[in-house]
Length: 301
Image (cartoon, rainbow, N blue to C red; front, side, top):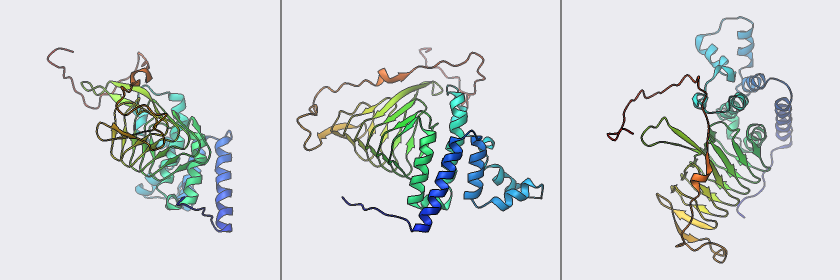
């Protein structure tokens, strides 16, 4: 193995553990999550004095006021807030936790690996539908909601990964997702891009999705498979296979797994359509079309 254990100095470890336990306890309590998030962000950004001055009615500049208001997730909007088919009740909770995750990444502490990994693991336990033990979440990870994500044990998600859970995303045990990967669970119609279909996307145990790859909504990356760098996965990846290219194709079986894997040239089934997640929109929905298009193909579709 090429890694070793690293520990913080005793005093730093004591302070880190106390902070994690305090935030974890508050998020687990009946305390309003919005208040907890605001409080934690004020202190992490070192803005307590300015916040207290503002709350006391003292003068603050317009820029200071916007900054101080921004620690409260109720004063923020996220792109996913506009998605009409989401579970509004779940989103109201996950939005606040997602805001804490994103704004924590904007603090200097986000670059302190030991601190940041343990903070994000604690936060993932509250944000995700399920999160296993000993996960390592690095900087710049984004997601649509968070509450439709299930992650197993000993998973590593590296920098600048996007985990889209507009549909549903399941990640198995010991999965590695490298820097810059995008994993999707929703698709847009090629004629009317405002028409969205949601899917259940699955990455099975021991799979590796390597640098800058893209996994399409509804795809299953099979157990122990490898998705090559910058591959675009459009259909299911068989267990133990290595896929590369755009669209990704199987080029080999991982050494030692030839006897249990399907042959490279086999007719590999693609069950993506079976993973579609239906939804209904309310009749009284106030629809918003950001494109304001009204184009139909000549066939009149």
